[in-house]
Structure formats: C-alpha cells, structure tokens
Length: 217
Image (spheres, helix red, strand yellow):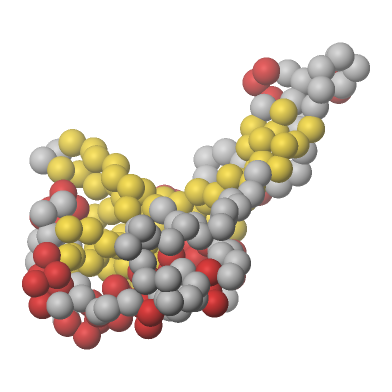
C-alpha cells in the first residue's frame, strides 16, 4: 500500500527520488530521533525541532503546553508541515556544484489536533518514550496528573505524505571525470557510545537490556 501523491507532495526536481510506499515512509519516521514542525504563527512562518513517534497511521508530536505549536493549536486544529531527514553519506564530486548527500527524508502535511483524550495521550507519551529507546516506557515512572497537565501532544494523520531518497555516488559530467580531484562517498552512521549512569544512580540498578547495545530501528 502506498500514499497517494498530491500536487504538494510531488517534487518539482528529481521526481525519481520520490517514494510513497508505507514501508519506506514508516521506516524513516521510526528511525529518526528528531523532526521539525513548520506552522504559521501570527502570519509568520516558524519551524521548531521536537520529538515524535508513529503509531500506525498517526504521527504524535511532543511539547509543553506553553510551546508555540501547542498554543497555536485550536479546536479547528493547526495546519503543519512536519519534516524528517536522515543523512547516510557525503557525496563528493569532482565539480563543486555536483556535491550532494545520501539521504532519506519524509514530508508530512496535515492539520494537527491537540490530543485531549487521557488514554490516547498516555499511549502517545508511551510511544514517544519507546521511540527513543524501545521498552523505556515500561521501565520508567508514568506521568502524574500535574506532569500530564503540563505536557501537550499533537496528532497528525498520515494522509498527505511523501519520502525522498538519494542513494549512489557522485554524478559528474563526462568532461570532469579525468580531473585530478578525489570523488566518492563518505558514509555516515549514528553510533552510540557506552551508556553513562547518573551520578546518583544506585549501583545495584543494572543496565537495561534495551541499552545493550543501543541501536536505532
């Protein structure tokens, strides 16, 4: 199954890089740790980084009740553009303007609603924790009423969605291939170092299995 392309989710350049299948879109959203949320605030564009999590065909965004997007969300919802990008490599070409990146990105367009239902909000907060480290929600104290009141969650249905993927090496002009400049790819990966316990952690508390080792999906 794939998302249906729309005029807003169809690239004007490099259309061959567009992806609409759910497996690609979901994989990118699930792997990325941070998203960026764009919206209009008093007629001015604003883009903010935040954490996110996907449950089925809903994307949840986390924030304080006093943050801009949460305050801007009304009973009619908040039109948003949510973007996620994973950089997999540096593409170094012989010509300056042929340099690029290996990347995977997703753009989600829609109207975000403020999650009011307590059960949905708790499920979303669990998903946000498990998105950071699978199994973490069951291995932490759940939010109390005060914390829950101070925390807001936005939900965006995954309807108008597209991914864009750039793979492969540099694409130099034939006339540039003989130039004496190195060309190729520098692969990039997200690697976790050894977990560092808090200074006041009880030494008897073991390192949880989901951190041995820590990996992204």
